[in-house]
Image (tube, rainbow, N blue to C red; front, side, top):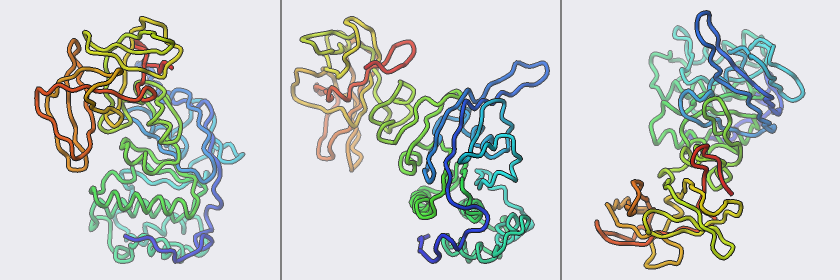
Length: 381
Protein backbone atom coordinates (compact mmCIF):
# COMPACT_ATOMS: atom_id res chain seq x y z
CA UNK A 1 0.00 0.00 0.00
CA UNK A 2 1.69 3.19 -1.18
CA UNK A 3 0.45 6.63 -0.25
CA UNK A 4 0.19 8.92 -3.26
CA UNK A 5 -0.74 12.59 -3.16
CA UNK A 6 -3.88 12.58 -5.30
CA UNK A 7 -5.95 15.19 -3.48
CA UNK A 8 -5.20 18.39 -1.61
CA UNK A 9 -6.38 18.64 1.97
CA UNK A 10 -9.47 20.62 0.99
CA UNK A 11 -10.76 17.65 -0.99
CA UNK A 12 -11.57 15.84 2.21
CA UNK A 13 -12.94 18.84 4.08
CA UNK A 14 -16.56 19.05 5.06
CA UNK A 15 -16.92 17.30 8.39
CA UNK A 16 -13.92 18.33 10.40
CA UNK A 17 -11.61 21.24 9.79
CA UNK A 18 -8.20 22.40 10.85
CA UNK A 19 -6.46 20.44 13.58
CA UNK A 20 -6.95 21.77 17.09
CA UNK A 21 -5.18 21.35 20.38
CA UNK A 22 -6.48 18.84 22.92
CA UNK A 23 -6.18 19.49 26.65
CA UNK A 24 -6.99 17.05 29.46
CA UNK A 25 -7.15 18.60 32.92
CA UNK A 26 -7.37 16.51 36.11
CA UNK A 27 -9.28 13.83 34.19
CA UNK A 28 -10.70 11.11 36.45
CA UNK A 29 -12.79 8.03 35.78
CA UNK A 30 -14.23 6.04 38.68
CA UNK A 31 -16.43 2.98 38.25
CA UNK A 32 -18.88 2.41 41.08
CA UNK A 33 -21.54 -0.23 41.54
CA UNK A 34 -23.84 -1.04 44.43
CA UNK A 35 -22.34 -3.46 46.91
CA UNK A 36 -18.84 -3.27 45.47
CA UNK A 37 -15.85 -1.10 46.15
CA UNK A 38 -15.41 1.65 43.57
CA UNK A 39 -12.48 1.42 41.16
CA UNK A 40 -10.65 4.48 39.82
CA UNK A 41 -9.31 3.57 36.39
CA UNK A 42 -7.94 7.02 35.50
CA UNK A 43 -6.47 9.12 38.29
CA UNK A 44 -6.22 12.80 37.44
CA UNK A 45 -4.52 12.88 34.04
CA UNK A 46 -3.15 16.19 32.75
CA UNK A 47 -2.02 16.36 29.12
CA UNK A 48 -1.61 19.33 26.78
CA UNK A 49 -1.49 18.07 23.18
CA UNK A 50 -0.63 20.60 20.50
CA UNK A 51 -2.59 21.05 17.28
CA UNK A 52 -1.35 18.58 14.66
CA UNK A 53 0.65 16.54 17.16
CA UNK A 54 0.61 12.73 17.29
CA UNK A 55 0.67 11.44 20.87
CA UNK A 56 0.81 7.79 21.91
CA UNK A 57 -0.73 6.50 25.14
CA UNK A 58 1.59 3.63 25.97
CA UNK A 59 1.22 1.16 28.80
CA UNK A 60 0.30 -2.38 29.86
CA UNK A 61 -3.21 -3.79 29.70
CA UNK A 62 -5.46 -2.27 32.36
CA UNK A 63 -3.42 0.89 32.84
CA UNK A 64 -6.30 3.21 31.81
CA UNK A 65 -5.22 4.24 28.32
CA UNK A 66 -8.33 2.98 26.48
CA UNK A 67 -10.59 4.42 29.19
CA UNK A 68 -8.90 7.78 28.67
CA UNK A 69 -9.48 7.52 24.93
CA UNK A 70 -13.13 6.63 25.42
CA UNK A 71 -13.67 9.63 27.72
CA UNK A 72 -12.23 11.94 25.07
CA UNK A 73 -14.50 10.35 22.46
CA UNK A 74 -17.58 10.64 24.68
CA UNK A 75 -18.06 6.88 25.00
CA UNK A 76 -17.39 6.99 28.76
CA UNK A 77 -18.72 9.62 31.12
CA UNK A 78 -16.12 11.78 32.85
CA UNK A 79 -16.20 11.47 36.65
CA UNK A 80 -14.34 14.75 37.08
CA UNK A 81 -11.98 17.00 35.18
CA UNK A 82 -12.24 18.50 31.72
CA UNK A 83 -11.58 17.75 28.05
CA UNK A 84 -11.04 20.71 25.73
CA UNK A 85 -10.61 20.82 21.96
CA UNK A 86 -9.09 24.20 21.24
CA UNK A 87 -10.95 26.54 23.60
CA UNK A 88 -14.13 24.42 23.60
CA UNK A 89 -15.06 22.32 26.62
CA UNK A 90 -16.52 19.02 25.37
CA UNK A 91 -16.55 16.67 28.37
CA UNK A 92 -20.33 16.99 28.78
CA UNK A 93 -21.22 16.86 25.08
CA UNK A 94 -22.62 13.67 23.52
CA UNK A 95 -20.18 11.77 21.32
CA UNK A 96 -21.97 12.73 18.09
CA UNK A 97 -21.39 16.44 18.73
CA UNK A 98 -17.68 16.28 19.50
CA UNK A 99 -16.47 16.07 15.89
CA UNK A 100 -13.91 13.40 16.76
CA UNK A 101 -12.81 10.55 14.50
CA UNK A 102 -12.39 7.20 16.26
CA UNK A 103 -10.77 4.01 14.99
CA UNK A 104 -11.57 1.00 17.19
CA UNK A 105 -9.44 -2.08 17.78
CA UNK A 106 -12.60 -4.17 17.32
CA UNK A 107 -13.27 -2.56 13.88
CA UNK A 108 -16.97 -1.84 14.71
CA UNK A 109 -17.98 -2.39 11.06
CA UNK A 110 -21.58 -3.01 9.94
CA UNK A 111 -21.73 -6.62 8.65
CA UNK A 112 -24.68 -6.24 6.20
CA UNK A 113 -23.12 -3.25 4.44
CA UNK A 114 -20.46 -3.08 1.78
CA UNK A 115 -17.21 -1.37 2.67
CA UNK A 116 -18.28 1.63 0.61
CA UNK A 117 -21.52 1.91 2.58
CA UNK A 118 -19.62 1.49 5.86
CA UNK A 119 -17.52 4.51 4.97
CA UNK A 120 -20.49 6.51 3.70
CA UNK A 121 -22.91 5.74 6.52
CA UNK A 122 -21.75 8.31 9.06
CA UNK A 123 -21.26 11.03 6.43
CA UNK A 124 -24.75 10.56 4.99
CA UNK A 125 -26.29 10.45 8.46
CA UNK A 126 -24.85 13.92 9.05
CA UNK A 127 -25.86 15.02 5.53
CA UNK A 128 -22.30 15.91 4.56
CA UNK A 129 -22.01 17.33 1.06
CA UNK A 130 -19.63 15.56 -1.28
CA UNK A 131 -19.61 12.37 0.79
CA UNK A 132 -19.10 10.12 -2.26
CA UNK A 133 -16.05 12.12 -3.34
CA UNK A 134 -14.58 12.04 0.16
CA UNK A 135 -14.93 8.25 0.34
CA UNK A 136 -13.45 7.83 -3.13
CA UNK A 137 -10.48 9.99 -2.16
CA UNK A 138 -9.63 8.10 1.02
CA UNK A 139 -10.16 4.79 -0.80
CA UNK A 140 -7.57 5.73 -3.41
CA UNK A 141 -5.12 6.94 -0.82
CA UNK A 142 -5.30 3.71 1.16
CA UNK A 143 -5.50 1.53 -1.98
CA UNK A 144 -8.87 0.08 -0.98
CA UNK A 145 -10.67 0.36 -4.34
CA UNK A 146 -10.74 -3.42 -4.73
CA UNK A 147 -12.44 -3.80 -1.33
CA UNK A 148 -15.23 -1.27 -1.71
CA UNK A 149 -17.97 -3.65 -2.90
CA UNK A 150 -17.11 -6.42 -0.44
CA UNK A 151 -18.66 -6.96 2.96
CA UNK A 152 -16.68 -7.15 6.21
CA UNK A 153 -17.06 -10.94 6.39
CA UNK A 154 -15.02 -11.25 3.21
CA UNK A 155 -12.04 -9.31 4.54
CA UNK A 156 -8.95 -10.41 6.41
CA UNK A 157 -8.20 -8.94 9.84
CA UNK A 158 -5.65 -6.59 8.31
CA UNK A 159 -8.13 -5.37 5.69
CA UNK A 160 -10.79 -4.77 8.36
CA UNK A 161 -8.25 -2.77 10.33
CA UNK A 162 -7.55 -0.66 7.26
CA UNK A 163 -11.27 -0.02 6.71
CA UNK A 164 -11.72 1.01 10.35
CA UNK A 165 -8.83 3.43 9.94
CA UNK A 166 -10.31 4.79 6.69
CA UNK A 167 -13.68 5.37 8.34
CA UNK A 168 -12.00 7.46 11.03
CA UNK A 169 -9.90 9.39 8.50
CA UNK A 170 -12.67 10.12 6.01
CA UNK A 171 -14.36 12.53 8.39
CA UNK A 172 -11.24 14.74 8.36
CA UNK A 173 -11.68 15.33 12.09
CA UNK A 174 -9.83 18.01 14.08
CA UNK A 175 -8.94 15.22 16.55
CA UNK A 176 -8.39 11.58 15.62
CA UNK A 177 -8.40 8.77 18.21
CA UNK A 178 -7.00 5.35 17.32
CA UNK A 179 -7.27 2.35 19.66
CA UNK A 180 -4.58 -0.23 18.84
CA UNK A 181 -4.85 0.61 15.11
CA UNK A 182 -2.21 -1.88 13.95
CA UNK A 183 -2.73 -4.74 16.38
CA UNK A 184 -4.30 -7.17 13.89
CA UNK A 185 -1.79 -6.69 11.08
CA UNK A 186 1.06 -9.09 10.43
CA UNK A 187 4.61 -7.87 11.01
CA UNK A 188 5.38 -6.69 7.47
CA UNK A 189 1.99 -4.99 7.02
CA UNK A 190 2.31 -3.36 10.44
CA UNK A 191 5.60 -1.70 9.49
CA UNK A 192 4.21 -0.51 6.15
CA UNK A 193 0.92 0.83 7.50
CA UNK A 194 2.74 2.44 10.42
CA UNK A 195 4.86 4.47 8.01
CA UNK A 196 1.85 5.38 5.88
CA UNK A 197 -0.23 6.39 8.91
CA UNK A 198 2.56 8.76 9.89
CA UNK A 199 2.66 10.20 6.36
CA UNK A 200 -1.13 10.74 6.36
CA UNK A 201 -1.06 12.31 9.80
CA UNK A 202 1.73 14.67 8.77
CA UNK A 203 0.08 15.61 5.47
CA UNK A 204 -3.42 16.22 6.80
CA UNK A 205 -2.34 17.55 10.19
CA UNK A 206 -4.73 15.56 12.37
CA UNK A 207 -4.25 15.99 16.10
CA UNK A 208 -3.97 12.29 16.86
CA UNK A 209 -3.92 10.06 19.92
CA UNK A 210 -2.89 6.44 19.40
CA UNK A 211 -3.46 3.90 22.18
CA UNK A 212 -0.97 1.04 22.11
CA UNK A 213 0.90 -1.41 24.29
CA UNK A 214 3.55 -1.84 21.56
CA UNK A 215 6.55 0.31 22.41
CA UNK A 216 8.02 0.06 18.89
CA UNK A 217 4.76 1.42 17.49
CA UNK A 218 4.71 4.24 20.05
CA UNK A 219 8.37 5.19 19.67
CA UNK A 220 8.27 5.20 15.86
CA UNK A 221 4.91 6.98 15.43
CA UNK A 222 4.65 9.51 18.21
CA UNK A 223 5.87 13.08 18.46
CA UNK A 224 5.42 12.61 22.21
CA UNK A 225 4.25 9.68 24.28
CA UNK A 226 2.54 9.35 27.62
CA UNK A 227 3.64 6.24 29.49
CA UNK A 228 0.81 5.12 31.75
CA UNK A 229 0.54 2.72 34.66
CA UNK A 230 -2.31 2.17 37.14
CA UNK A 231 -4.31 5.10 35.77
CA UNK A 232 -1.45 7.60 36.09
CA UNK A 233 0.80 9.18 33.46
CA UNK A 234 4.27 8.21 34.64
CA UNK A 235 6.08 10.33 32.04
CA UNK A 236 5.12 12.53 29.09
CA UNK A 237 7.80 13.47 26.60
CA UNK A 238 9.40 12.82 23.25
CA UNK A 239 10.53 9.26 22.47
CA UNK A 240 14.15 10.32 23.03
CA UNK A 241 13.33 11.91 26.38
CA UNK A 242 11.44 8.85 27.61
CA UNK A 243 14.10 6.38 26.42
CA UNK A 244 17.20 8.38 27.40
CA UNK A 245 15.92 10.07 30.56
CA UNK A 246 13.32 7.82 32.26
CA UNK A 247 11.47 9.43 35.16
CA UNK A 248 11.22 6.24 37.20
CA UNK A 249 11.94 2.53 37.20
CA UNK A 250 8.59 1.58 35.64
CA UNK A 251 9.24 3.76 32.58
CA UNK A 252 12.82 2.51 32.29
CA UNK A 253 11.66 -1.13 32.35
CA UNK A 254 8.62 -0.71 30.12
CA UNK A 255 10.33 1.24 27.34
CA UNK A 256 13.29 -0.37 25.64
CA UNK A 257 14.08 -3.70 23.99
CA UNK A 258 15.98 -5.65 25.21
CA UNK A 259 14.69 -4.62 28.62
CA UNK A 260 16.94 -2.51 30.81
CA UNK A 261 19.25 -4.35 33.23
CA UNK A 262 18.37 -3.71 36.88
CA UNK A 263 20.82 -4.46 39.68
CA UNK A 264 21.00 -3.67 43.38
CA UNK A 265 23.90 -1.51 44.50
CA UNK A 266 25.21 0.91 47.11
CA UNK A 267 26.43 4.42 46.33
CA UNK A 268 29.92 5.60 47.28
CA UNK A 269 31.31 9.12 47.01
CA UNK A 270 34.91 9.40 45.84
CA UNK A 271 36.65 12.59 44.78
CA UNK A 272 33.38 14.47 44.38
CA UNK A 273 31.91 11.82 42.06
CA UNK A 274 29.17 9.32 42.92
CA UNK A 275 29.94 5.68 42.18
CA UNK A 276 27.74 2.64 42.72
CA UNK A 277 29.18 -0.62 44.04
CA UNK A 278 27.74 -3.80 42.55
CA UNK A 279 27.85 -7.28 44.07
CA UNK A 280 30.51 -8.71 46.39
CA UNK A 281 33.58 -6.85 45.30
CA UNK A 282 32.57 -7.18 41.62
CA UNK A 283 33.40 -3.55 40.95
CA UNK A 284 31.85 -0.14 40.71
CA UNK A 285 30.39 2.15 38.07
CA UNK A 286 30.71 5.92 37.85
CA UNK A 287 27.39 7.78 37.64
CA UNK A 288 26.34 11.29 36.70
CA UNK A 289 24.21 11.59 39.85
CA UNK A 290 25.08 14.44 42.20
CA UNK A 291 22.35 14.46 44.85
CA UNK A 292 22.63 10.91 46.23
CA UNK A 293 24.15 10.43 49.69
CA UNK A 294 27.01 8.05 50.34
CA UNK A 295 25.84 4.58 51.36
CA UNK A 296 22.40 4.81 49.76
CA UNK A 297 20.98 1.48 48.62
CA UNK A 298 19.72 1.91 45.06
CA UNK A 299 18.43 0.06 42.04
CA UNK A 300 20.84 0.53 39.16
CA UNK A 301 19.55 0.59 35.57
CA UNK A 302 21.81 0.00 32.55
CA UNK A 303 20.37 -0.42 29.07
CA UNK A 304 21.96 -3.28 27.05
CA UNK A 305 22.59 -0.77 24.24
CA UNK A 306 24.63 1.41 26.62
CA UNK A 307 26.66 -1.37 28.24
CA UNK A 308 29.99 -2.38 26.74
CA UNK A 309 32.44 -5.22 27.29
CA UNK A 310 36.03 -4.03 27.76
CA UNK A 311 39.32 -5.65 28.73
CA UNK A 312 39.78 -3.40 31.75
CA UNK A 313 38.28 -0.21 33.17
CA UNK A 314 38.52 1.92 36.30
CA UNK A 315 34.72 2.04 36.20
CA UNK A 316 33.52 -1.49 35.50
CA UNK A 317 32.02 -4.72 36.85
CA UNK A 318 33.71 -8.11 36.73
CA UNK A 319 31.31 -10.54 35.07
CA UNK A 320 31.23 -14.08 33.70
CA UNK A 321 29.57 -14.87 30.37
CA UNK A 322 26.61 -17.23 30.88
CA UNK A 323 25.63 -17.48 27.21
CA UNK A 324 25.96 -15.54 24.00
CA UNK A 325 23.39 -15.05 21.23
CA UNK A 326 24.49 -13.98 17.77
CA UNK A 327 21.56 -12.14 16.14
CA UNK A 328 23.28 -11.10 12.88
CA UNK A 329 22.87 -7.33 13.30
CA UNK A 330 24.25 -7.49 16.85
CA UNK A 331 24.95 -9.96 19.63
CA UNK A 332 23.53 -10.32 23.12
CA UNK A 333 25.92 -11.41 25.85
CA UNK A 334 24.25 -12.45 29.10
CA UNK A 335 26.64 -12.38 32.04
CA UNK A 336 26.49 -13.12 35.77
CA UNK A 337 27.89 -11.01 38.59
CA UNK A 338 29.33 -12.45 41.79
CA UNK A 339 27.20 -11.78 44.84
CA UNK A 340 23.92 -10.86 43.15
CA UNK A 341 21.12 -12.80 41.48
CA UNK A 342 20.65 -10.42 38.56
CA UNK A 343 22.70 -10.74 35.40
CA UNK A 344 23.71 -8.12 32.87
CA UNK A 345 22.77 -8.30 29.20
CA UNK A 346 25.12 -6.44 26.86
CA UNK A 347 24.34 -5.66 23.21
CA UNK A 348 27.59 -6.26 21.35
CA UNK A 349 28.86 -5.41 17.84
CA UNK A 350 28.03 -8.04 15.19
CA UNK A 351 31.67 -9.11 14.78
CA UNK A 352 32.15 -9.92 18.50
CA UNK A 353 31.74 -13.38 20.01
CA UNK A 354 32.08 -14.70 23.56
CA UNK A 355 32.33 -18.14 25.15
CA UNK A 356 30.50 -19.44 28.23
CA UNK A 357 32.49 -19.01 31.46
CA UNK A 358 34.63 -16.32 29.85
CA UNK A 359 35.53 -13.53 32.26
CA UNK A 360 34.82 -9.99 31.07
CA UNK A 361 34.50 -6.43 32.38
CA UNK A 362 31.22 -4.58 31.73
CA UNK A 363 31.07 -0.80 31.83
CA UNK A 364 28.74 2.03 30.74
CA UNK A 365 29.02 5.82 30.36
CA UNK A 366 28.27 7.60 33.68
CA UNK A 367 25.33 9.52 32.19
CA UNK A 368 23.75 6.20 31.12
CA UNK A 369 23.96 4.58 34.55
CA UNK A 370 20.54 5.31 36.07
CA UNK A 371 19.86 5.22 39.81
CA UNK A 372 16.40 4.60 41.26
CA UNK A 373 15.00 4.60 44.79
CA UNK A 374 14.71 1.00 45.98
CA UNK A 375 11.21 1.46 47.45
CA UNK A 376 9.44 4.01 45.22
CA UNK A 377 11.32 3.52 41.96
CA UNK A 378 11.72 7.28 41.59
CA UNK A 379 14.78 8.38 39.62
CA UNK A 380 17.69 9.65 41.75
CA UNK A 381 19.76 12.32 40.07
